[in-house]
Image (cartoon, rainbow, N blue to C red):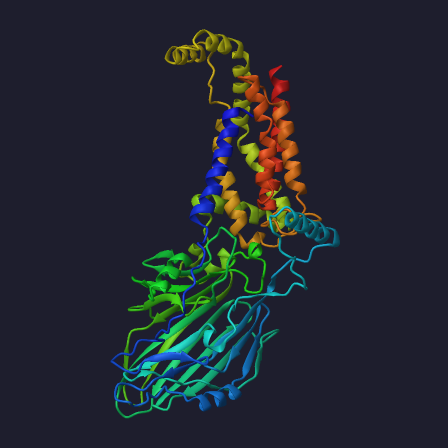
Length: 589
């Protein structure tokens, strides 16, 4: 491998690493005191809304009158006793809803586990590594214990912070309608039972009846939700309705984006946590303006303690059926909980009439095929960095071969072979170019010695030499330059593809999207690179050639933390390159 090619690869990796470190890394939190916020702004001037004891309370208005949403402390205690949970079981997930407003209490994905259970040797190795790092002053975290369990997408616990909260406001302020009545304790969708409905009913002291209906499907992560508000009064009244998704401000070491997302004016917007925190420190919210088709959150596993293992492979998505005039605000309730609140425009409900608000929900993995079925452009939330189109093409072929192999590690090997075949003409040309460059090394050395004090003349003579001998000094770099976008695309693809999450390969490699737990594959990759260096024709200063021999060591350390799937790709690519070099050398003799 030519020196310029090695330098090109190293520079590309350094750019990738520094971009991740300085542009994608979350800034440390600044300690601030939590502030009180309004749930839904009243249509007209009304009582101030605060939170106390986990429920919504309304202080008396300017005239001293208590708003209809006012809840006394004794009444709040009685309400807590009457709250009950309802479970929903399907083949894909297990969910729990609270009768306090029909909020979502738990959503576990049956086919996705939070952690991997490694064998005894791997656990011993990782524990030993942790202890050694601790002795060397690098710190170290105890390994997570316990059996794997389904991934949890609800990351908050307090009732006041549960997601899918419905908030209603009228001219007098926020309307209190929780807890709600529910007519069942559980729904079980299996076998011939393909659909189920869960209905919550509640009412407010001021004359509003509120019902909330969920419709579940056995083989889909999609849920239909409908909110009906009926006006029991004789006169009409205006109301606003907000649907709120709440989640914990979790720290993730993943370089992929995690946090609130929204489809605005036909494009996916990612609202960075850093921006949300800055607004929170000023007592403000992030206002998302434009045509909002849907909103939600790119989520990591809620029940994974190790920050390095949390990756945003999952998505919560809320699609309002009527999005015209929707107002989206994103902020923090306190230092631990953030929210995305979508407020519908005010509606006038005539006496005895009702208003209906319909939503479509998706709570599941970022599988592009499933997201496309929603027909709202949700698949655009899956991104693979700078070279997203290249990554999608590569992952398409990986998934295509997976239908036959059933092993993503084998699929990566296959794609490595196919790419080597595709680039074989360029690789051969590169090897031939390096051989030709090796032949002119003595003449180049003479020119350097002769014109060592005249750089301009040396450059002219070098160019004349290249033309006379018909050699290209950068010919050996071409295959490596072409492969840089593929390398970066594979890196992001393996980091962000839900299909490779917890995908096993062989023996100890049980997650191709995570690093090799005992570093065997990076060491083999380094050895193959060293062997490849030995076979590559040496050019230029012998001292530089010796320095280049350290590159396999540098690459080995770089690849220790890379996804094992990427290491497998690079290892196989090196082995194939060695074979190609051997074949080319025989052909040139």
